[in-house]
Image (cartoon, rainbow, N blue to C red; front, top):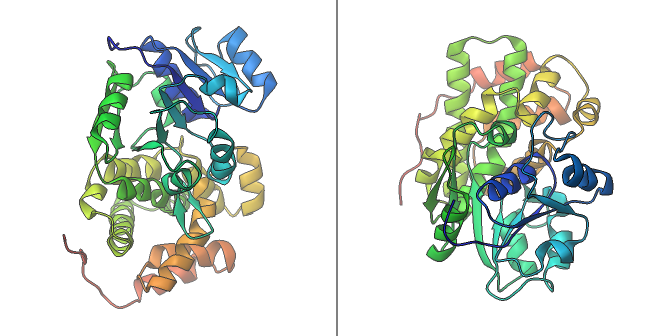
Length: 339
């Protein structure tokens, strides 16, 4: 626990938002968790549980939930935005007039807005231009984090006071927070890896071997880096926790929503039925369409993303897509350069 006490609000009562709010409470800082469900807010406040998203996890009694956004952010020093990407702009537009001066905003949402291919920090900046902004991402499965298993993440910002404040706020015996500056690359890592987690889930359902898994993970990373460099991100960001680390975790763990979507698709289930059954947002499904369109506009070669798009939206068979990939022209292993 740090000596300085921060007043904190976490917006979004899903699994990750709840896990972050619980760490803040464990570290002794006053924290409000904002969510839309009155029933769930009551459950958190009275039973200290969020059974829908983190079943079996006991929450710190000091964590207070509310459905009133103004109450949540009143006098807050730090606000974490952990809402689904489709809700981010709406929430931030409402938030704009409620924040105190010098408040720090941290985006944790791993998604992309369709209009203009905008990452969540860009959306936040448009709605709250004067916000002191940071982005947090890494191999952070919420269930394991809430279970207090050893985890690490990255907070990136051009403002060193922002990164230092988040490190001070969240650092504890089981959660380590590293600092970075490449906010765009960090956020792009978090959004893109969800697409490849769906690919990995499909492969797992097919029962592929370790060699194939190795190929899939490394080619996924190559595609992500190739696209990121084209968009102006630092490829070295993809070599760290938010890149390799998050990609590995999301592509191999059944706790990953996107992996579970892919696994179900690999079993022959319908996408709409899979998403409905999941009951939570799988950002990779939405990101895939945007990534495919953007890659075509920019002329970036992304065979895995294109293949997954064909499987999901063009109803091509897995066998045909794999055959086309294996018969494609041979290319370089690592085909981006440091700038």
